[in-house]
Amino acid sequence: MKKKVLVAMSGGVDSTVTAALLLRQGYEAVGATMDTGAGASFAAAENAAVFLGMEHHMLDVRRQFEEIVVRGFLREYEQGRTPNPCVVCNEQVKFAAFLPLMRQLDADFFATGHYARVEMAEGRFLLKRAAYLSKDQSYVLYRLKQEILSKTLFPLGGLSKDEVRETARELRLSAAGQPDSQDICFIPCGDYRAFIAERLQPAEGEACDLAGRVIGRHRGLAYYTVGQRKGLNLALGYPAYVVALDNAQNRLIIGREEDLYCRSALCAELNFIAIEALEGPMTVMVKVRYNAEPIEAVLSPADGGQAQISFREPAKAVTPGQAAVFYQGDIVVGGGTIVRALS
Image 1 (cartoon, rainbow, N blue to C red):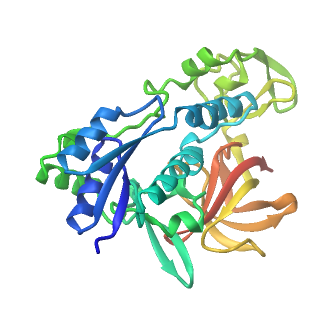
Image 2 (cartoon, one colour):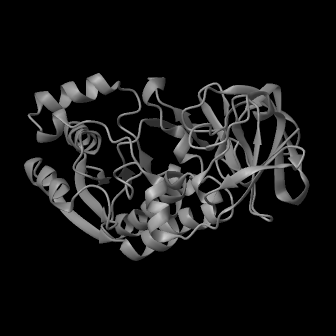
């Protein structure tokens, strides 16, 4: 019998080619699209499924998306952190919504258009980086559990973007020439500060240097992130950067570029994939933001179920709220949320 696979479809080139490849490989593919109230249109995904001859379903996740992703995004900024909403969405909305439908349809697998790979080794399902690192999306998938990884397919994990577009042209897919999305789906203009201004009322406060001296004012901590240089409106005689956000006192902490570097950081909300748990020090490569290059570090257990990252060389702009994802080679060991940078 053909294996049945539920395919998450947005109408874009990646998810449409994912479905087409699975059909070509002999799977019985069924499409499904999340209605989040933001992002790609349902019609585009439905049209892609019809073109490929697939059954198609819609999942209404607008309430969950608003509460978990959008409001969670805003809460993080209110608390002086810089969130990564895609990490939260993948774990708590996308995979959480599609897996029950997969069971309802008696599907064997769930597939997405992410550029990543899943392999099994020594009794564990491993998440691995994509073959073409320029498109690798394993960073935003580090929270996936073994149960989910055991049922997940990433057909694009071994392909380059050029190969995906060529496949789309061969199949005469309307999505073949679509540009890649670069923005947060619920902020399509990319202006998160304008979005925050519409939904929050950030309080103005003092901008201070590292010695605690008041050197100016800020518009509201939600408008800033660690490492930011532009838009500070401070004339200090040297290039000024945001080095920390003091949410307790509503203060923006300003310093020089060299003040952005730290030798260690604490992480919480840990999820491990390649191991059951962190039992002792482990040498890993760490990405401290999506587009950052991995840097070598030692990962160690810390109090309260946290982990400490000790960088081999000082790391720049390690930002509370962002994900730190741990790698050994192409394998995702796991990851966590950065709580704070340490000196």
